[in-house]
Amino acid sequence: MFIGRHGERRAIICKDSPTSHATDLNGLTYIDLQKRRAAKLNFLIWIDALENEDVVHGAKLVRCYSNKMAPPMSDSYWRGLSGNAKAEFILVGNSNKSWLKRDTRATATFASDILRIIGDGGSASIVSSPLFLSDLKTFLMEVILPQINRMKKPGRSQIKKALSNGLKCGVAASTNYRGVLSDQLFVLVPDLMSPDFVDDSIVFELRHARHPVEFGYYVQDMRRLAATASIPDLVEKMKSEIKT
Image (cartoon, rainbow, N blue to C red; front, side, top):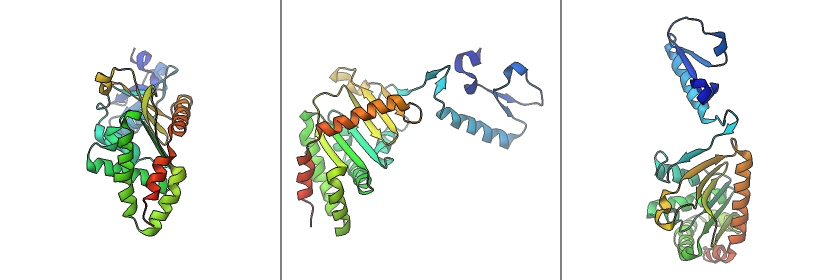
């Protein structure tokens, strides 16, 4: 009954005696509890494998959270999206206040992540609502720019060159969703709630390894949105203020 509901790869049998098992249960994971150290290791390996499980009876699994505060250690979860990104980061939102103006330390860390990604040859994009264009300008001019100007001259020169193609910032009136792309992970927040309850919107995770087709659809849309929403003058204005 348990196997029928969850699938054999999510079923495990722990044996505490050298008994044999029925042949119709072949294929299940067995752990011999008489070998305690090996049992613990094998159990942890099985648990870890569940993280990469993407099919139960032919259905693709998508991890979801009831709202943006639901992920374990939610603040670290969201900050880790930019902190762990290496090649590509795209942020699409409304005000994006949690990223751009939440508090001085968090915002400075986000700016450092953006500069690191760009400096290493990657790309970063930020798309906000037109109503919050001023916040985006403030983030560029008062958070990112000072960090660049505190760099030594070779670092400033490298970042200045990378900014033209590496950073896109702009606004979009309607996107139908909010989301964050962090390399091979896409976190989706559909705009299903009224503005008064936007913080209660459900959160979905799509990973390239598990959902390559669906992941590809959203990534293509985010890249298109970042390109069409981009206002190059925002970045160019900041570049003009970089110390020579």
